[in-house]
Figure 1 (cartoon, rainbow, N blue to C red):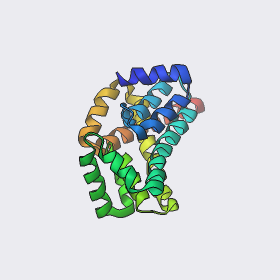
Figure 2 (cartoon, one colour):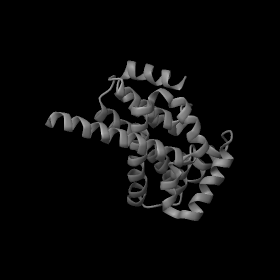
Figure 3 (cartoon, helix red, strand yellow):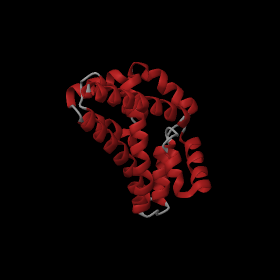
Figure 4 (cartoon, rainbow, N blue to C red):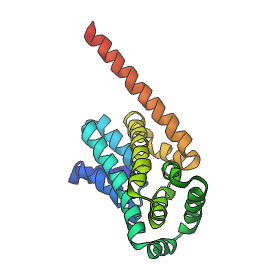
Length: 201
C-alpha cells in the first residue's frame, strides 16, 4: 500500500521524506504525487507531523521536482525528450503534453498539474522550447501552490480514503481535486469559526 511506504519513509527520515518522495517523482517514483501530498495532510491530522512545515516541504518537493524537468529540457533539449520517449507508455503522455502546449501555450503548465504523468512531461518540453524561467515560475509555482493546498487539505480530512480518492483522481482529474479540496477547506474554516466562537464565550 502506497501510504505505508510513505509512513515508513517519514518514520525514518522525518519531514524530508515528503520532499524527496516528490522530488524523485521526476525519475519515475512508483507512488503517484497525489497520494504523497494527501498522505502529508493525513499525517498532520494524526499528529505525526506539524501542518506548516509538512505543507511547505511538500510544496517545495512538488515544484522543485517539476523544475528539474524544466532545467533538464532547457539544458539538454531533444536528447532528454528522446530518453523519456523510450520509457514504457510515455508516447501517449508525450502526445497529450505536445497537444496541451500547442493549444494553450504557457497556460499548459497550469492544466498539466491536473493530468498525472503529463505534469512531469510539460516542463521538459517548455524548457526545451526555451520558455523564460520567470514565465515558468509564474505559471508553475502559483498553480503548484493551490494544487498542493487542495490535496493537502483533502488528506487532512479524508485521509482514510486516500486510495479511493487517488483512483477517482485518475478518472476525473481536476473535478475530483476541486470538489475534495473545496470540501476540505470548508470543513477547516467551519471548525476554525466554531473554535473561535467557543473561545469568545
